[in-house]
Image (cartoon, rainbow, N blue to C red; front, top):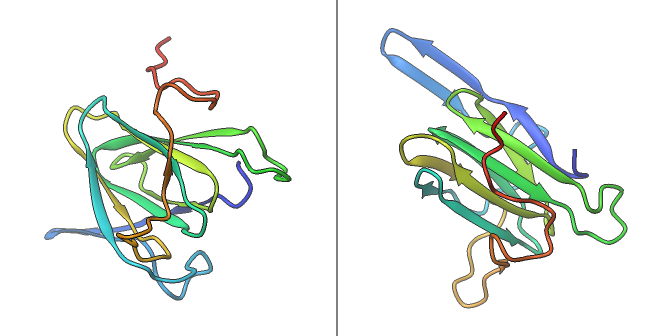
Length: 151
């Protein structure tokens, strides 16, 4: 796995009324600090990516549908420089994915319906000077193709 990336099993507590799923708690080792909490959605087959942050650490949890989340490590001096990680997260695989600064990330909706992702980043979004650096999802130097892999 890319250096600094962490994956946590999410605890789902079901009963006859429904279910509750704890995503991130301040008393866990994986918790760093709170910046804000937001929801993002992706339609089936759509790719949202690539981007990275200089300071922000992301904490992704897919709460509806399934997403293919892909990371790429371009960091000079990193033991995992050049490595690509693929994660299939969501209703069928509930986990929290922590993404460190400077690691490119993106995701693709792989469900038949809209996929919903909750992110609890460590930093507030700065509307005047966003800590967000983007490249085209398909035309770039990242050694990854978003195509479905059948077989």
